[in-house]
Amino acid sequence: MYRPVISAVRALFFVQGTRFTITGQEHVPAQGGAIMAINHTSYLDFMYAGLPAWPNRRYVRFMAKKSVFSHNVTGPLMRGMGHIPVDRHKGGEAFAAAIRALRAGEIVGVFPEATMSRSFELKEFKPGAVKMAQVAGVPVLPVTIWGGQRVWTKNLPKHMRPGSRIPVSITVGAPLEIARREDVNAANERLRAAMQVQLDAQQAAYPTLHGEDLRYVPARLGGLAPTPEQAHAADHHDMNRTRDEFTG
Image 1 (cartoon, rainbow, N blue to C red):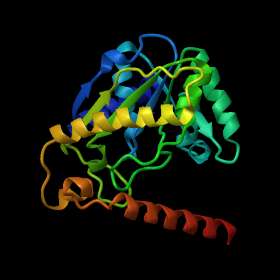
Image 2 (cartoon, rainbow, N blue to C red):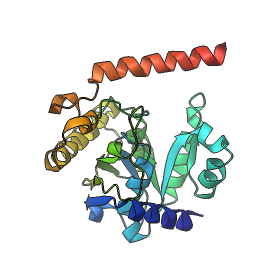
Image 3 (tube, helix red, strand yellow):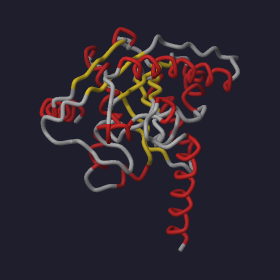
Image 4 (cartoon, rainbow, N blue to C red):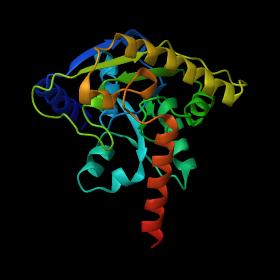
């Protein structure tokens, strides 16, 4: 099912006129297992992140929350493409499934921030990506995406219409090898630092935005996006509201 979905996605990008700048495709291995660690600012990040793997005809098996697999429309697609469901209450099952996929030579896509960043800055990373790399003995590919938040992100207007022509930059960094005995927290910070360097370069090269488009630019860069502290408070509010609705 993956191939026709890719064709449909590429057609969508063509209609939208998305202007991609993709660098580092050569770092995606032609064969063998690897983890793609991806920053998360857009609902379409999983589509963007798979593009650098396509020249080698590699499919990325993304780890995604279990509720997506329960949906009547997305569920069959996610299962058909071999993605990995994550139950936050039973994380060990997803971890084991990812290790099996990596050892079988698959590329597994992970969002270390776990949730979308409203500030468009890198959030703190969960250590799952480096732990899996350590156990499976595979490299981690730092993947950063910039510009996708202008297409569709949380709580801001989306621009999915034909001819939007929004630039999206995708960078795949050099593979990081995680030693078997390396401290997981240190390796996690090493990954985050590598992704920050990539993201800084992408932001510096991106076309200058003005007016309402400054909503998609981090406050640190003079934009109108929430600061990381404001974004964290909004995430905390949403989490509590969801919990209250569930228990109520």
